Amino acid sequence: MYDVIIIGAGVIGSNIARELSKYKINVCILEKEDDVSCGSSKANSGIVHGGYSDEPGTLKAELCVKGNKMFKQLEEELNFGYRETGSLVLAFSEEEKENLEVLYRNGIANGVGGMEIIDGDEVRKMEPYLSKEIKWALYCKDSGVCSPYEFTIALTENALENGVKLELNNQVTDIKLSESNFKVITNRGEFETKYIINASGAYSDKVSKMIGVNDFDIIPRKGEYIIFNKDQSYLVNKVIFQVPTKNGKGILVTTTYHGNLLIGPDAQQVTDRDDVSTDEESLRAIIEAARKSVDGFDMKKALTSFAGVRPTNTKKDFIVEETGVKGFLNVTGDSPGLTSSPAIAKKVVTILKDSGLTLEEKEDFKSYRKPIIAKKDENFKGDINSEDPNKHMICRCEKVTETEIVDALNRGIEVRSLDAIKRRTRAGMGMCQGAFCGPRVRDLVAKTLGINENEVKQRGDKSSELHNRVKGLKDLMEDI
Ligand SMILES: Cc1cc2nc3c(=O)[nH]c(=O)nc-3n(C[C@H](O)[C@H](O)[C@H](O)COP(=O)(O)OP(=O)(O)OC[C@H]3O[C@@H](n4cnc5c(N)ncnc54)[C@H](O)[C@@H]3O)c2cc1C
Image 1 (cartoon, helix red, strand yellow):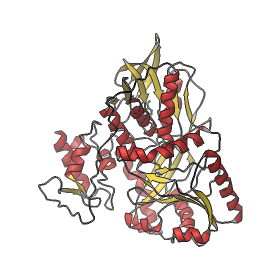
Image 2 (cartoon, helix red, strand yellow):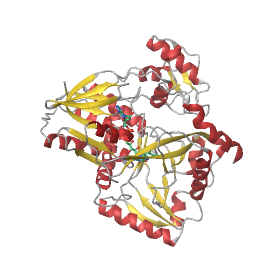
Image 3 (cartoon, protein in one colour):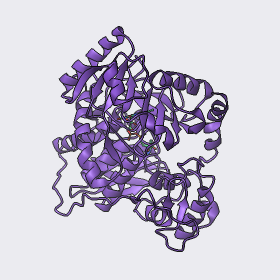
Image 4 (tube, protein in one colour):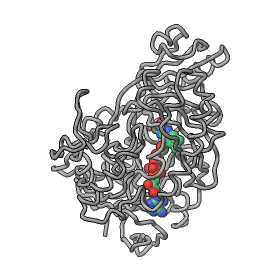
């Protein structure tokens, strides 16, 4: 019997798990995929938003600003990759400047500090490669970038180290009330618990309906991206937005935490919640919009395209509440859900306490999590034939060693796919996109785990998707 079961190991479920691991209770996460961070938390912009975009008085506004302020300490404890960069929202006309003023006023009302509206010349002093057409911009010092999947992995690893259980490959198919407890049924078995936290992202409406709570629906909205080689990142230092549209924050240009140029996302309403395909027409529109902000990126340096699905809901705000069924909490939110996730987790703890769960703090909570990716100096060469695991280079593009890959396999989360290793070590994220290191990683995973090479798949059982995803982009690289 668990005290709390969390359904879904995205960034929200993992933050909640880590927060609850500070207390003397039994917690379990049920996740349908073969790794954590396989939903929206894997494929997003990775922006830690300042908090000026959301309407004052909403839960989004409140939790975004609170979450933003927690990232610095979380990075010190968990080493997942976060950097404060600042952001600019660009205006190309006087009319658009009025939108900046609205954002500025929102920011002040939401408690965001470090904002000012600056003119085009000041913008180009900060970011010399941006368009000469920019007239004004809202500068926000407190925005940043993080590696969203490494954040989720780090949170879960630390939660497991502090006693939380993780059951991967367990898809929740039904929930029943038995006496005053819940019985959670998955494709693999049954689990009993006093409380349930439904953090299943794009599926949270379906999971909620399993217990008869039917007060919202998810309207999935896909966003596509193109990511470029690191040599294109000289173009921008900060996160560069354009004024928002009715569909969201618009096309951004940024350098990711690990130094790749990233452009996107668009916003397409889709029916399939797992539709992470990209298409040529959408990518063309993204390129055109991004070129309005900064024209200099070289399409021949594009590495790949990808997409994520936002779990937008019909209540049009985050949902973080105990439902009419006592002990069953719905916790779901689209952008800025990544930024807000640490504050969402704190709010969930308060709700659980108010609902009667006894939460006594552990004296021996371990807050520190060691990074997987070792810091290497610029001259680190490594050797693809070395016998020393610290020097034995498996991935040449990202300089990933045998030690890092073996470490990634021994962190408590039982993973074996090439994508799981890629998210943890960056092996396969460089210019060759795994053509050189893929077979070497497969060999090493099989050897380390004592399994057959055929058992090491690209990504769980969905390996065939990869080819479709990058097709449109290849054509664009030739054309543009
Ligand atoms: C294109 C895009 C751009 C974004 N950009 C930003 C940004 O820059 N900054 C920001 O703050 N936010 C951003 N967001 C929002 C942010 O990514 C999401 O709010 C956040 O990832 C949601 O986390 P989650 O844990 O709720 O969902 P998810 O990460 O989707 O996790 C839900 C988990 O539940 C599992 N699950 C589903 N059903 C079941 C079941 N029946 N049984 C067991 N497990 C189940 C899934 O497999 C998944 O792992 C963006 C989102 C998208 C898509």
